[in-house]
Each structure stands twice: as structure tokens, then as C-alpha cells.
Image (cartoon, rainbow, N blue to C red; front, side):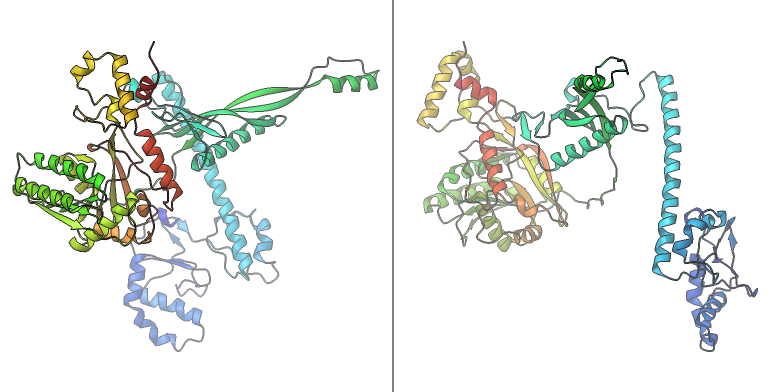
Length: 606
């Protein structure tokens, strides 16, 4: 009622006192508009003169509102009457919670806004429950009316356009794909397995949220079937399909198996009752029937997210490259050399980029000297780009066998030295980045709001993917000879030598969504997340530190300008997180080569 009225004028709405004074009664409640409330606050001192002299607090309060607002009680405002039900005021009447069943037949009670003189909490609770049921029934009637109207409009539109009526009512039909490459794929599922359209995995166990989703859909489908055919006995879910449409939500097709008892006995003579009963029992037969149910889980309970803070690309970035062992030295030096080549045609830069190589104690002094010389050359070539370089000695308090532990130790010392108010971009020594990647790291990393974990393009084993031969050599070398040569190099453990440029193609690698070796984060957000890990915890990556936080969230995006060169990846099997170990092993296995490349290598073509 309040939402349908205009309250911009001063008004006090309620039940007027019987003495004709024009004040509103407090025991039946009153509604004050915002202008009336403002007048009451400004003139509240006028109540002091008679409030102390009054014997009745209720009477004093009623007069205070009348005098301070200088308004007369209005039982009728904008065509709406302030209705009061007085069935509970009679001395001989039972309690309200015992009388509602009788009151509900009165039209005046249904229109009531206030019921005074309640005797207990049970009265208030009973009244509340009753009017909630009234509102729900009213809402149900409006929903039924709206569904009928939507069905009428859908039928009219179908007649005009010639298209089929979409189901459920008011939902748009399935989106038409712009081309054959964007056709929606249905996922097949049973109660134990889920078959998804993924390039490297055909089937996964049905568990977690997917299991809860399927179980809830099966229950809804069973309720629909068994309400129409109660004689059926449920056996099992045969199979099901689901597909997501951004306009409709999730749609399902569920095939249910039921058992049904039928009587195949023809009509018999009732004179032979005992024989008929025996024949009847023998004629009962159980048959299996299938029922397909279409279920739709519409998109509901949507909410607008808070607007992302405004960010610019002029933020300073500190790039941290951890070098924890000697095998990381050469890849890190190649990364610095590629960065130096990007500065052959330098441009004026107003943003500062700091390149830091975090060197661990296991690195030999001659390797540290070589890295230092590379950093000086990089700084000289990128002088106009405001590039700073530094070699940061890291002295971790614990073992750094886990990659995540080494990354944490490098970031810990970097934040301590350079401060927490800048963006830190952690790069793997095996990374190959383009200049545009730094801009994306700046724009996607937001202080106190967002951490950026790009999905890198990970290179396959060059020997298996054919990157060890040039295109000319590949054409001139017979297939079987190339296969035998590749197998021989793999058996001997020969280090692969790439002869082609690494480009983003499915023959050269894949986007690894389980690789979290590179990420960008503000120093202050890293310090907050770092507190989740103990100093002695060994991990393969740091993604779990940023999960489950209320203040910031993780942004993942495919990043073609971030490529990870092939290297023999090792997983720390002593990590305290089993999911961390499983993720590392899966990533290591999938990044060896594509399945068709492995098949061509292992099986001879006839």
C-alpha cells in the first residue's frame, strides 16, 4: 500500500481519536510521511510543556505528534482508508490466534491494516502467518493470470511468425548459432559419469556440484511423471542430456526407466471364481517403460555486481622471475634476451617497468654473473622505455623444492624490498611474453579487487610435435624415417632443439587452464593472501591462496601473448594440498603432446 501512494506531502495517517481532537490513536498505529517526520524533529521541543504534566504516556505521545507536526489525523488519504479490525478488543472474545478462522470470513478483516490489543506473541504470529498466506495466494493468482496471458501472446506470435512456441512460457527460444562452429553441445550424463565436449577428456566422474545438479533434476522429473502415472515404479535414470543457453538457463532431457504391472488375462466367466483368481495371478506381468521428461532450470536470483573500479594502463609493474636451480638459468637468460629484442625499436614510455631476477642460494656464482650482465644489457637497450633491472638474492627460510614455495619466497623478498603499492607480475623462467601482455596485466590487476591469472599457451614436446624440423626438412623426410628418428631421440633423452618459431597453433601446444605459474597481483593483496600459507608449507603453485576471499576475486583469461616453452616439469609430491598435486600431474601429462601426435608416434601407419 505504501509503495502505491505519494508521500511527498506532510501527512499523518491513522485512526482518529473519538473525542474529535484530530489526533491519531497510538494503539492502532500511525503512518508519518517524510515531511511530517521532518516537522516533528524540528518542533519536538513543543512537547516538553505538556509531556511532564500528562498522566497518560499514550495520550501525551499522541498530542506531541499532533502539536509538533501541526497536522490532523487522516484516516483516508489518496483514496486509501486506514482500516482497523477491532474483533480482539471485546472482553468476551477469545484470543486472536483462536479467532482467525472466524474472522477470515469478514471482508473488513481482510482489508484491515492494524489489529490492536493483542494479548500475546502467539496472536501476533498467527496474524502474521495468516496474512502471509493471503499474500501468497494473491501472488499465485497473479502468476496463473500472467502465465495465461503469456501463453496467449506466445500463440499469437507463433501464428504471426510461423515459429514454434517456446517452452517454458515467457522464455526465449534457443539462440541460433551464427555458424556451425558455435552450435551448442549437449552434455550426456548418467548418475555416475558426465560426458563433456572437451578436447583431451571424454568422460569425468559425476561429483560435486554437477552431481547435486543432476540429482535435483532427476527428483523433479520423477515428481512430474509419478504425479501423472502413480502406478509406475521407478527403477533408475537411464541417461540424460543438458545444455546451457545464456538466455534460457540450463535445459535437460531426462530418460527415466519405470516398472509397470499389467494384466494380460482376457475376460473370464465369473462362475469359476477360484480358477479365475489363480489365472489372474499368473496373467500379471511386469513390463519396463521409458519416460522422457524435459526440465528447464531458468536463470533466477540474478543481481548486479558492484561496478569494477576504474583502472588505467600507466601503473608501475615489477616483473619477478624466480631462478631456483641451475636448470632455470638458461631459460631465464633466453627470456631476458627476448625482452631485449623487444627494445630494438624503443618508444618513449611514461610508465616504469622493473625487471627483477630472484636468484636462490643454489645458483652458482658464474651463473649469477651471467644473469647480471644480461640485466645490464637489457637496461642499456631499453633505456628510453624507463626499464629498471635488478638481481634480487633470495634467502628462503625453508626448502624451495616446490615451485609454489619458490615463487612465494621470491615474492616475499620482492615485496619487502620494493614496497606493497605496486603491481607484481610473477613470470616463469620458461615464459615467452609479448609487449602487449604487460598492458593487459596492468589493466586486469585491480588493487583490493582483482588478481589476474592468465591462461598461458603451453608448448608441446618439440620432438613429438615436429618442431625440431623445419618445414622444408619435414617435406623432404619420409614419415616413417622421421618417426624412427623421433623415437630414437626420446629413448636417448636428447634435449629437444626447436627449429621453428613458437606460434599459437593446436599442433604446437595448448592453452593450459591448470597452469597457474604466472600471475599479477598488487603487493598489498599478496601480503593479505600470503597469510593463508604457513612458512613451511610446500606447494606447486599459489592459486589456492587467493580462493575463497571476500575482498578480491580471481580473473582468468586466455592469453595468446603469454607462452610457456617446453621443459621437463616436476611436481612436488610432498605438497600439503592433494588437489594441488593432482592439478600439477594432470597439467604435466596433458602438456606432453596432443593425442593424435602421440598416436602417430607410437603406432606405425600401414
